[in-house]
Length: 96
Image (cartoon, rainbow, N blue to C red; front, side, top):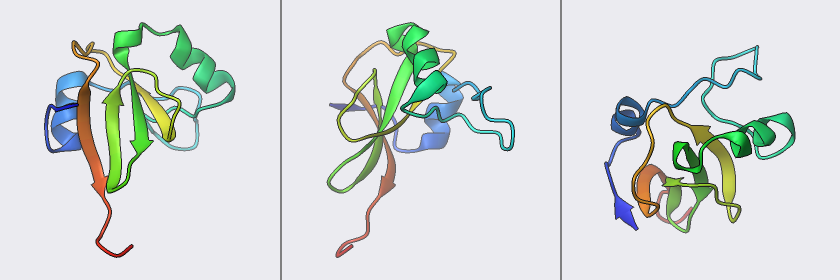
């Protein structure tokens, strides 16, 4: 896997995740893994979809539609070019 940037804010600036229009009570760019939200995600071009996944030492945003350890999906305005792209999202603390 290729880490493209160390900060989610940089990834957001480069790829521009879209707002989830299914959620009215808060503004979010995260799409759920079920129902009409995941149906919407699967209708998008594959290289505009990213998955927020849980890993051994933290959570990550990875290019593409993944099912294993998924927390949710992001759809971006800008496409990714390498399916091995990874963005560290949150590191777990030692001993947790």
